[in-house]
Image (tube, rainbow, N blue to C red; front, side, top):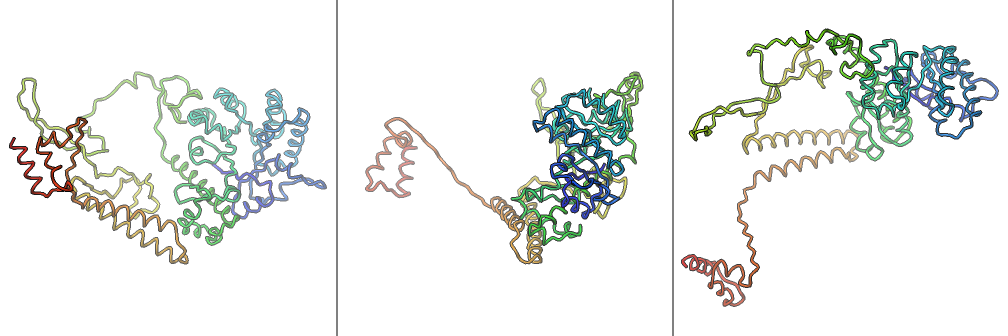
Length: 499
């Protein structure tokens, strides 16, 4: 899967992309025309892009659909677009059809049969729209080897992942191309060959921060930049970028970081895909004589094992020694006393759920496999951590341990803050706040408060004290100032209880 960086029709963007190492870029013909084509000579891709850069072209149908162009204007634009494709066909890897829906489906189908075949269907991508349904997607797959899918369709159609994989299983030479789609979740769902995006320009246009943290692509809004960027100082410098420029909001440098991050995402997706290809997935059975239709979500794109139902129904009973408790929790037994039907006490062993210290993580799929010192392929995790929190002392010891860990984090954050010139880092302050919050929880555990609170309410005229102490309550009104000592109160209560 290749990520295609859109916006290469702008010279400054083109230079930024090529200098940052992007080798798959896209030109939007509509924006190219809007910027103004050369009047004295032809616009040749070969004169503007290095030979190792693969150029993709989008007809700009999404832009045209938002305009009120006449039929004649649309047809003239379409003719100019096709002439320009022919002029630069030696440098175009893939071109998307002119998806101008105002021209009508008949016109679009005619262009697919005529110009598409002349230009070469192996590098001509037709556009699928969600309103045609999965039946329309399947119909395109039967006729064309390249299908473009809009990013909004991937977002809206939750079942597109399984449907597209099932179709790809039937047509292995088919390629899906995502347009305006580089959201990591979507890239993992639909089996795309390419995914084009303009998101890499967000740092330049809106001040966002896009960075690859080593395992995933993270994105921060402009208001979070002062807090987010210092976290990735080591990653930024390892990528060969100037951290000081990024902290100073240099638009080119922060955009280079976004380009580099998307390239790391591309490598990660391709590596995961190649690793999956090493271990074959088990064949699935759907009890059909033919292959799956495009609507099957069970097979996940794997060729079904269409054995008969009689094979599926044979179920061998496991040996009791092979059956074990699901390894999520540990289970112990406790003897309890219960009443039987006759009312007699009986003893019974009741299962008690507790935490399980045994880890079932696998080295091959572990989150920290790349940095773990005990990594061993095809093995379970080498570490476990027995945890038991059943008493107040155990809880207090756990909180004290966390406090010590947090103090170490605060100290290291302060050390990094000093090395970076001493400017207050919001992340350091945040860690200090967490430390004080944990200390406050420990203080609550250490406090032993014993008090009695009595709330009494009476709506009759006699009053609450009269109900509690009877006629002796009038003694309170006989004392000057209404104040009595402890001895007087004790005597009043004792006399009332004697009565």
